[in-house]
Length: 414
Ligand code: GLA
Image (cartoon, rainbow, N blue to C red):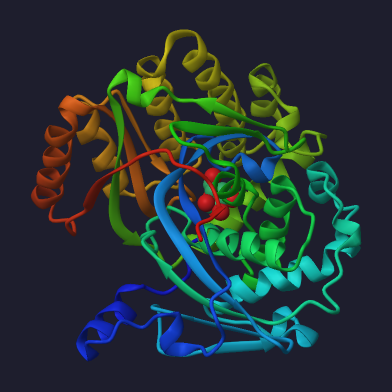
């Protein structure tokens, strides 16, 4: 979830003072290295991750970059272009109760790594593999970290996962921890759930850590088996347009928790451990057992899981142009059954479709954020203009419309 503050404030202040805030202007330690991790867009598979289901997100070419220096004490200090402060915590006092604001995304990773040995048997950690049981932070050095980012905040493109994952790859490398990427995604999720307090699934961190250029990550959120699937967008002359509606609903977190609870209630009433255990053939029985609202929530998750499987199969057999109808159907399901869309997202989707998009849907947690449209490169500008015009006509805040390319996941840059 996107709860980090806007990066624009810090950047604007730096511009006013004529001095760009950077690592050297804040810290005295020498720079040891630079790591980065991308935001993500989800091609399809929404609200399926915490139901043990399937997702198909990709890393985008917008990244969070963390420059790091190793200290000779046990302090973690973090600064950024987001605000004027330097936040700090001791590695000997890592505790989610002492973390708040955007620095919780950073300190939370250290905390989650520190408790990983006691969590090693939890289902996601066990499925992720990797030897989390041997992690020991008792003698690792403190770090100075400086964060910059061009992942838009509050747009539903996982600026939070980009921050967590850039920090996670830096910390594991500098502290010599042998943690594979799947396990690191589980560490990121634990941090977001407990240190930040957002009860999200494992999709965003997995996309940010496992993404590859022109590919998406087909992830089974139960086994955590991940398959990097070639999207073939470049060869097919296709692009993904993002429409950031700038709608941020105050009840987004509440709505997310409520949907999650409905899914758990539905699974319990149907006698399964998670909705992953149901398929489309089970829906007739579900309609008899569940109240109308819970049934529609369940139907979204069950049909969305099937759409992910169908999308991956269709991509492999028929190519990317053939997945459009599945993207469209996913949006209808989120709008009508899961009820997480908003008028701005619906307008972005219907306008993009009418202007020639191959397919379109809202992406991410919902209640605002962004829609994506799969478009032929030749139609990109016409689709973007049509969406902008439709928003003006409807009296909505002007959206930001831009192209994203499926990109490489977290890495060391220097
Ligand atoms: C947010 C969460 C993810 C996932 C999506 C919905 O982005 O962080 O874990 O649940 O919503 O698919």
